[in-house]
Length: 59
Image 1: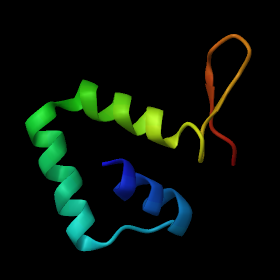
Image 2: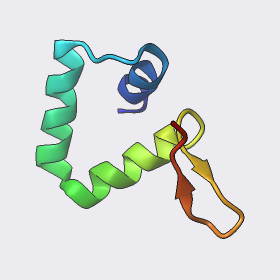
Image 3: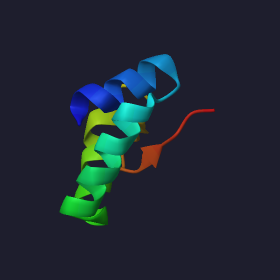
Image 4: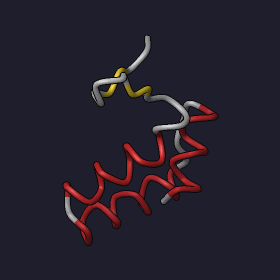
């Protein structure tokens, strides 16, 4: 999942095969796990965390 999401954050688009892999992970592991992993992987790429711990998504 980390490899797929890093590719998405760097390229800005998603290949069909990777989309199917993410869909399978979402189906197997559930929404809570999926979003948690998405935030953890994307934290260094897209998301910023404020001093109070809130996520900031830049434009």
